[in-house]
Each structure stands twice: as structure tokens, then as C-alpha cells.
Length: 254
Ligand code: PEP
Image (cartoon, rainbow, N blue to C red):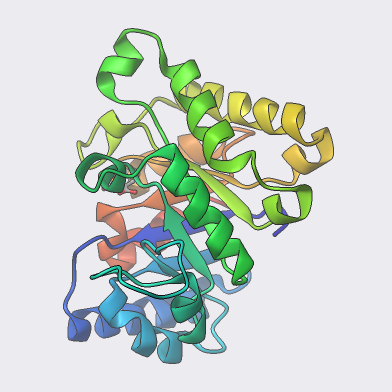
């Protein structure tokens, strides 16, 4: 996937099936009326809502993503879903390594690397999340943490596979806390990630990689974040649960 301006909504464990359908219908209407073609929209509802979301989003240009996948095709992995199962219901993107999955479900850079590989093998784009905790920011180890997350999670991919990756920088201390990184804090890490990619692959591939910022993005702070040269859009949690806010955040991408 070439570099794109993207606004992606991670709904987490929110919205019943009916509520998800209603929110998708609302977003779909607003994108059609106001913003078609201006930036790439992606929504990540719960697993439960994916098949009907896929039908509702058909022909709209809005991408559909899942919040997680397993790295195996099938088997004795109770409670899990594979990338191929997701692909078959119309999913195009999958979040890998969200900090909540790292924190509550024991995901590591190693398991993330396996998930990214499997997602790509099945034709999905992996949206790979990285970010430091508050203590890692305070003890200034965050460059090292990000470098490990990126290299261990992604750098086993060849160039062709890497083209199927979007990176999301989400400082853990900014997720759901109302504390967003300042534009200069975010830009510093985005530029650093792009340098890591250039060093591993090439300047051209780095320039072609979409790197999103996530962490308490709202309509009133999106503009200053999205103006930064290395920030290609946002992964939005709480504010993506309201169609109006989600669309207003996307307006800042113009
Ligand atoms: C997220 O969970 O990816 C996120 C960025 O959440 P929020 O926008 O609510 O901080």
C-alpha cells in the first residue's frame, strides 16, 4: 500500500451488533456526502460486527479492519480467529500489537511478527502499533523501545511484504487518557520510525510508508498533529465512536 492519508477508528470492545450497524450507516452517509476521496477511512469494529459491516461498506471506499488475528490458519486456539477467516468475510486490514493487547493479553514483539506475517500472507494490510509507556518516556528509553518493537515486529518481512504494512505510533500514556503527545513529541518519533525503515529497506520505501499517530486524538487537536510532515493520519479510539467527531478529525487531514 503506498503512502496514504488515513483516518482509522478502533472501536475496541464497544458497540453491540445493532449499534455497530447504525454507526457504520451514519459514517457511510457522512463520507458520501462530505468527504469521498479526500482521505482513506478505515473502521475496526468488533469481530461480531465484521460480516454485516462488510456488506454495509461495500462500494463506499471505506476500509474494514479487525482488531486482532491469530497467526495459525486453524486449529486448537479457543477464542481466536485466523487471518484467512477474516479475509473471507471481507476484512482488508488488521490491527497488530495494540498496547491493550500487549498489556492485557501478553502479546510480544515475537507474536506480533507472526501475526503480521500471517495477515500479509492472506492479503490483509497489517496496522502495526508501537509506543512507549509513561515510565519508558520518563526514563528516556523510548527510542530503544520503539526500535525493538519495529525491528522485532516488522523487519523479518521482505520488501514486498513490508508494502502491506501501516505503522501506528501510539504512546501508551496517551491512549484513552486525554493526554495527547505534543505535535513535536509525535513528529520526533514518526521521523525516527521513518529513518529506521529507510535504514532497513530504502529511502523510497520509507517515504512510501504510512505512519499514523494515535492517543487521545480529538477534533480540536487533530489539526496540529496532522500538519506534521511525518504524520500521515490517525488511529482514533474514543472519538471514533461518534460519527461526527470521526469525520471532523478526518477534515484535519486535508
Ligand atoms: C487507540 O486505542 O488506538 C486510541 C488511540 O485510543 P484513544 O483515541 O481513545 O486514546
